[in-house]
Amino acid sequence: MIDLGLTKLAVIGVVALVVIGPEKLPKVARMAGTLYGRAQRYLNDVKSEVTREIEMEELRNLQKEVQEAAQNVKSEVENSISQNMADLENNWSDSSSSSDTAASSGYSGYSAYSHVTTDDLARKAREFRRKKLVRNSAIPNWYKQRHGGKMHVTSGAARVARFRPRGPTNSSFY
View 1 (cartoon, one colour):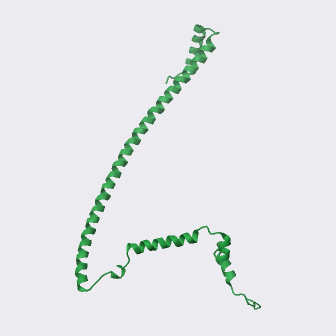
View 2 (tube, rainbow, N blue to C red):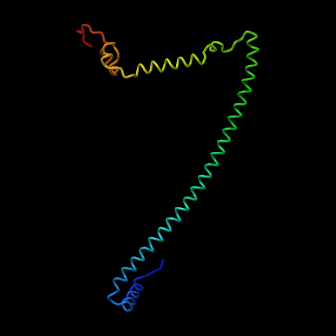
View 3 (cartoon, rainbow, N blue to C red):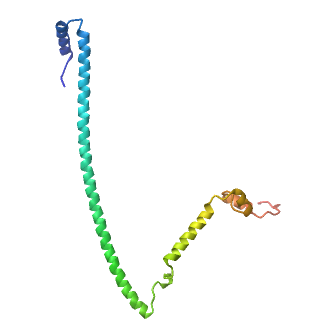
């Protein structure tokens, strides 16, 4: 801003003392300091607002670039998928026509797995979920004790110790 050295401040102080007078000089100095502080805060606010706007503009440009890149990737992926689906459909139609000729000649390909249907898969999935629910359900401990269910998790060493045959162990290790 303004380059004020010690000599310039001294000259300004002497002139202010002569012009304003010693009685009003402290009030004027306080007011000048307050106004100077307000001006600095205002300039700092303006600078921060300008830098914030510049950063926001840079972020907007970056966002546009990223959106364009994402759109390009999306279109490439869609093109690749459509091309692969077309190839798959062509291969499927070729293989179905060749399997028709193979079926007429006695070859059935993967007929061992043809008996698995979606109904069988759905039934197996329901059965798996039911068994998992039974294993993890909140069954009371008194019921588990009465019917032999697991009460808590035991370690491998504890299971070995529990099921180790107990007999006369008079023999030593050596």
